[in-house]
Image (tube, rainbow, N blue to C red; front, side, top):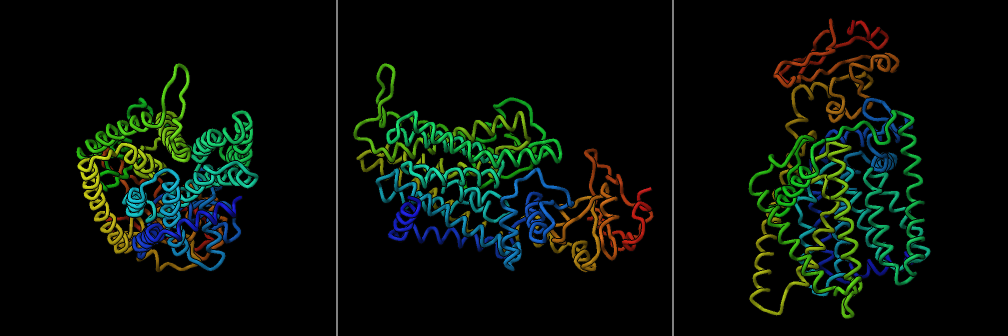
Length: 523
């Protein structure tokens, strides 16, 4: 089953020049955006540090040498595999993200072929995904989103197939993989299970379909549960320490509307954890609100054209393409369930705004729903089709211009902690000259690791671990930070240590030889 499905999938892609060309283009844009180095943020440092530690046989340890619980190990295991075959973490991530970009575009095309009859709409929608600034912002970072998107879309494609032994075996593996790449994976696993249940009900019957798909979900969750238990034993939490955002569910949903607006305007917006609706530009708010109104209207058109309502049940119209319905059910279930979960999570579990990065998993499902709605709503009137076509050309031109500009800028300057301006700061140039066998501590370990690439980087509260670490010499990189009132934060700065470098960014202290007592500098 799986072999035949994949052969069918690849034959469809290869037989269509546009599908293959757009998939390659998506991968090339990813490579261009990363040619100066894949972007790093706080999350990235843990992914790479854990991967480096795994490759060196030290286990699943984060930047500071502690067992990782706040992030799953999937991406880190992939990085470790790349390092083990001789690739640098940066080169491996560049290749991984490019591969994921190719898969996302190719599978999008395959999903559209199952749902849409118009070749023009299929190619246009695939091109929209290939030249998406929102997606490029993920491919240009060392984040878990690119592999998560690739695995999710493959799982969507497999879930649309008839039930077989191969599908029954593959779906648990793919759903478990989603969890080990991102902790939010089970939410998508639930959506995939529900959709697969509905899709397979005519083949198997409702009860049998429910049993088989539910068992598959249970099997997929078993290794996830074992990992959660492992985390609980380490630090008392299932997924690491997290703090809820509070407030009402309206707040994250408003932020979602702003994010949708940035997708329309080809201006992705990724803020800090305290980002809210008020931080979005007025243009994004207007575009997002307008998109929601139009999108809901198109969904009503889909429902009106695809279904007829009797007294107590909805019956699919006889002339409706079943594959179209399956893709609609799958994409809508994934999108709605994830939006509801994300809003609830923000309020009650984790302070994570619904920005571009948070909502990117449903980018393709939403685009697919829009494409289906457009095809269903387009009439035979030539003027109406011309208006739709002109609108798409204008929107696509905006996205094409933006994604090209972003790829060139990211490729030349880098992103975040991989940016040239950050990497080439005098304090960081000095750090790079420190002896390879030395131990470097910092009050900002993740930030420093993006420069040194040498785990562990202990902080000022890990003196016992630093004392036990074998090394030749110790140094402390103190980054200048401020409290909310603007006063300098000098809490737990080393005392009596010799400063060997100082500038506006911070100070590098010499803590002496590793045989000396490090506690001397923290009396």
